[in-house]
Length: 334
Image (cartoon, rainbow, N blue to C red; front, side):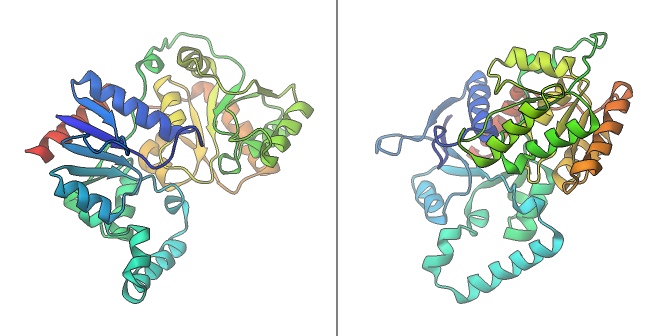
Protein backbone atom coordinates (compact mmCIF):
# COMPACT_ATOMS: atom_id res chain seq x y z
CA UNK A 1 0.00 0.00 0.00
CA UNK A 2 1.29 3.45 -0.91
CA UNK A 3 -0.36 6.50 0.62
CA UNK A 4 -0.02 10.08 -0.55
CA UNK A 5 -0.68 12.91 1.91
CA UNK A 6 -1.78 16.30 0.61
CA UNK A 7 -2.56 19.66 2.21
CA UNK A 8 -2.99 23.13 0.63
CA UNK A 9 -1.12 25.27 3.19
CA UNK A 10 2.70 25.37 3.56
CA UNK A 11 3.72 24.77 7.19
CA UNK A 12 6.07 27.75 7.00
CA UNK A 13 3.13 30.15 6.71
CA UNK A 14 1.18 29.10 9.80
CA UNK A 15 2.12 26.74 12.64
CA UNK A 16 -0.43 24.93 14.73
CA UNK A 17 -2.10 21.67 15.63
CA UNK A 18 -2.82 20.68 12.02
CA UNK A 19 0.89 20.47 11.29
CA UNK A 20 1.35 18.19 14.30
CA UNK A 21 -1.62 16.08 13.20
CA UNK A 22 -0.22 15.58 9.70
CA UNK A 23 3.33 14.83 10.86
CA UNK A 24 2.23 12.45 13.59
CA UNK A 25 -0.20 10.69 11.25
CA UNK A 26 2.56 10.07 8.73
CA UNK A 27 4.96 8.81 11.39
CA UNK A 28 2.35 6.45 12.88
CA UNK A 29 1.45 5.02 9.46
CA UNK A 30 5.10 4.46 8.60
CA UNK A 31 5.53 2.53 11.85
CA UNK A 32 2.69 0.32 10.61
CA UNK A 33 4.72 -0.47 7.50
CA UNK A 34 2.78 1.78 5.11
CA UNK A 35 4.76 3.63 2.44
CA UNK A 36 3.86 7.31 2.80
CA UNK A 37 4.82 10.30 0.68
CA UNK A 38 3.73 13.92 0.57
CA UNK A 39 2.16 14.83 -2.76
CA UNK A 40 4.77 16.37 -5.04
CA UNK A 41 2.75 18.72 -7.23
CA UNK A 42 5.65 19.05 -9.70
CA UNK A 43 6.16 15.29 -10.16
CA UNK A 44 3.94 13.84 -12.88
CA UNK A 45 5.40 10.37 -12.29
CA UNK A 46 4.41 10.06 -8.62
CA UNK A 47 2.08 7.13 -7.97
CA UNK A 48 -0.03 5.93 -5.08
CA UNK A 49 -2.99 3.79 -4.13
CA UNK A 50 -4.77 6.33 -1.99
CA UNK A 51 -4.68 10.05 -1.16
CA UNK A 52 -5.35 11.32 2.35
CA UNK A 53 -6.15 15.01 1.97
CA UNK A 54 -6.06 17.25 5.03
CA UNK A 55 -8.59 19.96 4.24
CA UNK A 56 -11.42 20.00 1.70
CA UNK A 57 -10.40 19.07 -1.85
CA UNK A 58 -12.38 20.22 -4.87
CA UNK A 59 -14.69 17.81 -6.64
CA UNK A 60 -12.41 18.01 -9.68
CA UNK A 61 -9.41 16.97 -7.56
CA UNK A 62 -11.30 13.91 -6.36
CA UNK A 63 -12.53 13.04 -9.85
CA UNK A 64 -9.03 13.22 -11.36
CA UNK A 65 -7.55 11.13 -8.54
CA UNK A 66 -10.24 8.47 -8.86
CA UNK A 67 -9.73 8.41 -12.63
CA UNK A 68 -6.10 7.49 -11.89
CA UNK A 69 -7.32 4.57 -9.80
CA UNK A 70 -6.68 6.23 -6.43
CA UNK A 71 -9.11 6.34 -3.54
CA UNK A 72 -9.55 9.73 -1.85
CA UNK A 73 -10.01 10.23 1.88
CA UNK A 74 -10.18 13.66 3.43
CA UNK A 75 -10.73 15.19 6.82
CA UNK A 76 -11.60 18.83 7.24
CA UNK A 77 -11.47 20.74 10.51
CA UNK A 78 -14.86 22.42 10.95
CA UNK A 79 -13.49 24.76 13.59
CA UNK A 80 -15.58 27.84 12.82
CA UNK A 81 -18.74 26.03 11.82
CA UNK A 82 -18.70 23.83 14.91
CA UNK A 83 -18.62 26.87 17.19
CA UNK A 84 -21.55 28.73 15.62
CA UNK A 85 -25.03 28.86 17.05
CA UNK A 86 -27.81 26.62 15.75
CA UNK A 87 -29.44 29.67 14.15
CA UNK A 88 -26.23 30.62 12.35
CA UNK A 89 -25.80 27.06 11.09
CA UNK A 90 -29.40 27.02 9.83
CA UNK A 91 -28.81 30.24 7.91
CA UNK A 92 -25.58 28.86 6.45
CA UNK A 93 -27.30 25.66 5.34
CA UNK A 94 -30.07 27.70 3.71
CA UNK A 95 -27.50 29.81 1.89
CA UNK A 96 -25.75 26.69 0.61
CA UNK A 97 -29.00 25.30 -0.77
CA UNK A 98 -29.97 28.57 -2.47
CA UNK A 99 -26.47 28.98 -3.92
CA UNK A 100 -26.48 25.47 -5.36
CA UNK A 101 -29.78 26.18 -7.11
CA UNK A 102 -29.21 29.71 -8.37
CA UNK A 103 -25.50 30.40 -8.76
CA UNK A 104 -23.32 29.24 -11.66
CA UNK A 105 -21.53 25.93 -11.22
CA UNK A 106 -18.23 27.73 -11.82
CA UNK A 107 -18.81 29.67 -8.60
CA UNK A 108 -20.19 26.94 -6.35
CA UNK A 109 -17.47 24.49 -7.39
CA UNK A 110 -14.95 26.73 -5.62
CA UNK A 111 -16.74 26.01 -2.34
CA UNK A 112 -16.29 22.25 -2.89
CA UNK A 113 -19.46 21.36 -1.03
CA UNK A 114 -19.91 18.28 -3.24
CA UNK A 115 -16.58 16.86 -2.08
CA UNK A 116 -18.53 15.28 0.78
CA UNK A 117 -20.47 13.16 -1.72
CA UNK A 118 -17.62 12.40 -4.14
CA UNK A 119 -14.88 11.30 -1.73
CA UNK A 120 -14.50 7.61 -0.92
CA UNK A 121 -14.44 8.36 2.81
CA UNK A 122 -14.79 11.50 4.93
CA UNK A 123 -13.05 11.56 8.32
CA UNK A 124 -14.24 13.62 11.27
CA UNK A 125 -12.20 14.20 14.41
CA UNK A 126 -15.24 14.12 16.70
CA UNK A 127 -18.79 12.86 16.69
CA UNK A 128 -19.90 16.51 16.64
CA UNK A 129 -18.00 17.19 13.42
CA UNK A 130 -19.37 14.01 11.85
CA UNK A 131 -22.89 15.25 12.59
CA UNK A 132 -22.08 18.62 11.01
CA UNK A 133 -20.72 16.92 7.89
CA UNK A 134 -23.93 14.95 7.50
CA UNK A 135 -26.39 17.74 8.29
CA UNK A 136 -24.61 20.70 6.71
CA UNK A 137 -22.96 19.12 3.65
CA UNK A 138 -25.07 15.97 3.16
CA UNK A 139 -22.12 13.63 3.67
CA UNK A 140 -23.07 9.98 3.26
CA UNK A 141 -23.37 8.53 6.77
CA UNK A 142 -22.01 5.19 5.51
CA UNK A 143 -18.84 6.90 4.26
CA UNK A 144 -18.33 9.20 7.27
CA UNK A 145 -16.12 7.90 10.07
CA UNK A 146 -14.72 9.37 13.27
CA UNK A 147 -10.96 9.07 13.78
CA UNK A 148 -9.68 11.47 16.46
CA UNK A 149 -6.20 12.81 16.98
CA UNK A 150 -3.74 10.79 19.01
CA UNK A 151 -1.17 11.68 21.63
CA UNK A 152 2.56 10.90 21.65
CA UNK A 153 3.66 8.16 24.03
CA UNK A 154 5.82 10.50 26.12
CA UNK A 155 2.71 12.22 27.51
CA UNK A 156 1.33 8.96 28.98
CA UNK A 157 4.25 8.32 31.30
CA UNK A 158 2.58 9.45 34.51
CA UNK A 159 3.19 8.84 38.18
CA UNK A 160 0.02 9.35 40.27
CA UNK A 161 2.16 10.11 43.34
CA UNK A 162 4.09 12.89 41.60
CA UNK A 163 3.60 16.17 43.48
CA UNK A 164 1.77 18.96 41.68
CA UNK A 165 2.90 22.54 41.31
CA UNK A 166 0.87 25.62 42.17
CA UNK A 167 0.31 26.86 38.61
CA UNK A 168 -2.24 26.30 35.87
CA UNK A 169 -0.90 25.78 32.35
CA UNK A 170 -2.28 26.76 28.96
CA UNK A 171 -0.62 25.75 25.68
CA UNK A 172 -1.96 27.65 22.69
CA UNK A 173 -1.04 29.95 19.83
CA UNK A 174 -1.14 33.56 21.04
CA UNK A 175 -4.13 34.55 18.95
CA UNK A 176 -7.58 36.09 19.63
CA UNK A 177 -9.24 32.76 18.80
CA UNK A 178 -7.45 31.12 21.73
CA UNK A 179 -8.35 33.95 24.16
CA UNK A 180 -4.94 33.83 25.81
CA UNK A 181 -5.00 37.54 26.73
CA UNK A 182 -8.40 37.10 28.38
CA UNK A 183 -7.03 34.18 30.37
CA UNK A 184 -4.01 36.19 31.49
CA UNK A 185 -6.13 39.12 32.61
CA UNK A 186 -8.53 36.87 34.51
CA UNK A 187 -5.65 35.04 36.21
CA UNK A 188 -4.23 38.36 37.38
CA UNK A 189 -7.64 39.37 38.77
CA UNK A 190 -8.00 36.02 40.53
CA UNK A 191 -4.38 36.16 41.73
CA UNK A 192 -3.76 32.67 40.34
CA UNK A 193 -0.43 31.69 38.73
CA UNK A 194 -0.72 30.55 35.12
CA UNK A 195 2.04 29.43 32.77
CA UNK A 196 1.22 30.19 29.14
CA UNK A 197 3.13 28.20 26.54
CA UNK A 198 2.96 29.15 22.88
CA UNK A 199 3.86 31.74 20.29
CA UNK A 200 2.02 34.12 17.95
CA UNK A 201 1.78 33.82 14.20
CA UNK A 202 3.81 37.04 14.06
CA UNK A 203 5.53 38.94 16.86
CA UNK A 204 4.24 42.22 15.42
CA UNK A 205 0.64 41.10 15.89
CA UNK A 206 -1.38 43.63 17.94
CA UNK A 207 -3.04 40.97 20.08
CA UNK A 208 0.31 39.44 20.95
CA UNK A 209 1.74 42.84 21.91
CA UNK A 210 -1.26 43.48 24.15
CA UNK A 211 -0.77 40.07 25.77
CA UNK A 212 2.92 40.77 26.36
CA UNK A 213 2.07 44.08 28.00
CA UNK A 214 -0.38 42.36 30.35
CA UNK A 215 2.14 39.63 31.11
CA UNK A 216 4.87 42.13 31.98
CA UNK A 217 2.46 44.08 34.17
CA UNK A 218 1.50 40.95 36.13
CA UNK A 219 4.70 38.90 36.13
CA UNK A 220 3.94 37.47 39.55
CA UNK A 221 0.90 35.65 38.14
CA UNK A 222 1.59 35.24 34.41
CA UNK A 223 4.59 33.20 33.33
CA UNK A 224 5.53 33.30 29.66
CA UNK A 225 8.70 32.07 28.01
CA UNK A 226 7.38 31.37 24.51
CA UNK A 227 6.82 28.00 22.89
CA UNK A 228 8.42 24.73 24.06
CA UNK A 229 9.44 22.34 21.28
CA UNK A 230 10.88 19.63 23.55
CA UNK A 231 8.00 17.19 23.92
CA UNK A 232 9.43 15.56 27.05
CA UNK A 233 9.71 18.94 28.73
CA UNK A 234 6.15 19.83 27.75
CA UNK A 235 4.88 16.51 29.11
CA UNK A 236 6.64 17.21 32.40
CA UNK A 237 4.96 20.63 32.59
CA UNK A 238 1.53 19.03 32.16
CA UNK A 239 2.25 16.42 34.82
CA UNK A 240 3.44 19.02 37.32
CA UNK A 241 0.66 21.53 36.64
CA UNK A 242 -2.26 21.93 39.00
CA UNK A 243 -4.59 22.08 35.99
CA UNK A 244 -4.84 22.82 32.27
CA UNK A 245 -6.89 25.66 30.76
CA UNK A 246 -8.03 26.22 27.16
CA UNK A 247 -10.60 28.96 26.55
CA UNK A 248 -10.78 28.96 22.74
CA UNK A 249 -13.67 30.66 21.01
CA UNK A 250 -13.37 28.14 18.18
CA UNK A 251 -11.79 24.70 18.19
CA UNK A 252 -11.98 21.39 16.37
CA UNK A 253 -10.22 18.88 18.62
CA UNK A 254 -7.46 20.42 20.70
CA UNK A 255 -4.22 18.44 20.67
CA UNK A 256 -3.02 20.26 23.78
CA UNK A 257 -6.17 19.26 25.67
CA UNK A 258 -5.60 15.63 24.66
CA UNK A 259 -1.97 15.86 25.79
CA UNK A 260 -3.00 17.29 29.15
CA UNK A 261 -5.57 14.52 29.58
CA UNK A 262 -2.97 11.85 28.77
CA UNK A 263 -0.67 13.34 31.40
CA UNK A 264 -3.41 13.14 34.05
CA UNK A 265 -3.86 16.90 34.30
CA UNK A 266 -7.38 18.20 35.21
CA UNK A 267 -8.73 20.50 32.51
CA UNK A 268 -10.94 23.57 32.18
CA UNK A 269 -12.31 24.05 28.66
CA UNK A 270 -14.64 26.38 26.79
CA UNK A 271 -18.18 25.04 26.96
CA UNK A 272 -18.59 24.11 23.30
CA UNK A 273 -20.00 21.06 21.48
CA UNK A 274 -16.59 19.72 20.40
CA UNK A 275 -15.41 19.61 24.02
CA UNK A 276 -18.63 18.10 25.37
CA UNK A 277 -18.65 15.43 22.63
CA UNK A 278 -15.12 14.31 23.51
CA UNK A 279 -14.54 14.98 27.21
CA UNK A 280 -18.09 14.80 28.54
CA UNK A 281 -18.25 15.10 32.31
CA UNK A 282 -14.48 14.65 32.71
CA UNK A 283 -13.88 18.37 32.08
CA UNK A 284 -14.79 21.56 33.90
CA UNK A 285 -16.35 24.11 31.56
CA UNK A 286 -16.38 27.88 31.21
CA UNK A 287 -18.60 30.02 29.01
CA UNK A 288 -16.79 31.06 25.80
CA UNK A 289 -18.01 34.61 26.48
CA UNK A 290 -16.72 34.78 30.08
CA UNK A 291 -14.06 37.40 30.77
CA UNK A 292 -12.86 39.74 33.50
CA UNK A 293 -14.28 39.11 36.97
CA UNK A 294 -16.68 36.46 35.65
CA UNK A 295 -13.84 34.41 34.21
CA UNK A 296 -11.67 35.10 37.24
CA UNK A 297 -14.35 33.49 39.41
CA UNK A 298 -14.40 30.38 37.21
CA UNK A 299 -10.60 30.15 37.32
CA UNK A 300 -10.55 30.57 41.10
CA UNK A 301 -13.12 27.81 41.58
CA UNK A 302 -11.25 25.46 39.19
CA UNK A 303 -7.93 26.21 40.89
CA UNK A 304 -9.34 25.29 44.30
CA UNK A 305 -11.02 22.08 43.11
CA UNK A 306 -8.31 20.85 40.71
CA UNK A 307 -6.29 18.80 43.26
CA UNK A 308 -9.35 16.65 43.93
CA UNK A 309 -10.33 16.12 40.30
CA UNK A 310 -9.58 12.76 38.66
CA UNK A 311 -10.54 13.00 34.95
CA UNK A 312 -11.45 9.60 33.51
CA UNK A 313 -11.02 10.35 29.79
CA UNK A 314 -8.04 8.66 28.13
CA UNK A 315 -7.06 9.59 24.56
CA UNK A 316 -5.63 7.23 21.96
CA UNK A 317 -1.94 7.02 21.19
CA UNK A 318 -0.83 7.94 17.69
CA UNK A 319 0.03 4.28 17.06
CA UNK A 320 -3.57 3.35 17.85
CA UNK A 321 -4.77 6.07 15.45
CA UNK A 322 -2.36 4.72 12.84
CA UNK A 323 -3.96 1.31 13.27
CA UNK A 324 -7.46 2.75 12.80
CA UNK A 325 -6.40 4.52 9.61
CA UNK A 326 -4.59 1.44 8.31
CA UNK A 327 -7.77 -0.62 8.71
CA UNK A 328 -9.78 2.10 6.97
CA UNK A 329 -7.39 2.22 4.01
CA UNK A 330 -7.34 -1.56 3.70
CA UNK A 331 -11.15 -1.71 3.58
CA UNK A 332 -11.22 0.93 0.85
CA UNK A 333 -8.60 -0.79 -1.25
CA UNK A 334 -10.40 -4.13 -1.01
